[in-house]
Image (cartoon, rainbow, N blue to C red; front, side, top):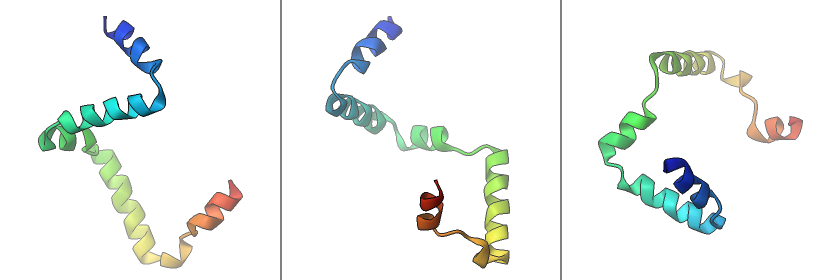
Length: 71
């Protein structure tokens, strides 16, 4: 049943899909949102590593405009 429902929802116009997505997101409690967005220990460690690297050498950062231009 869920796949039929999802198939039908995916056929809706984008504006209606966004409205449904927002309603679903807003239906979550703060605890549910936090649990879904929690980082794994590996992700936290990688972010810590990247931050430490940046603090140690802030000039190594590449401006977003340059990254976008290279893409």
